[in-house]
Length: 96
Image 1 (cartoon, one colour):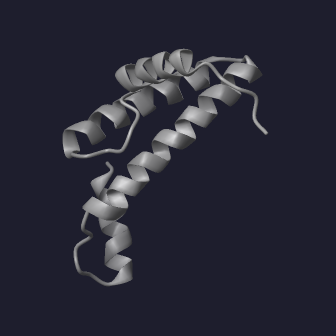
Image 2 (cartoon, rainbow, N blue to C red; image 1 turned 90 degrees about the vertical axis):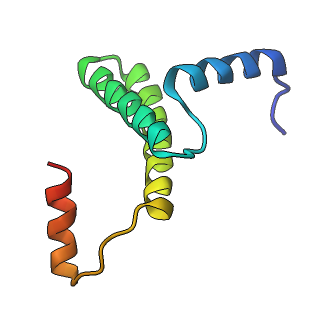
C-alpha cells in the first residue's frame, strides 16, 4: 500500500505545475500552443543539464506533455484524405 500523502501539499504542487506548464487535458488550439511552448522549454532545459537526477525528472514531464499533445492531435487534427505516401509528405512539410 502507498504511504499516506499530504493532500494540501499535493494540490499546491499540482496548481504550480498546472499554472507553470499548463498541464492537464488539452481543450483547444490555444492550450495546445501553451503546452507545446512549455514542452520546448523543458527540452531546452534538459539539453543544458548534466545532472542525471534532473534529466530523469525532466524526462518524466516531457513524456507526460508529449502524451497530452499526441492525444489532442489524435482526436482533433484531421489528416487530409490522401495516399499514404502523400500523407507522410504532408506531415513532414507541415512541421517545417
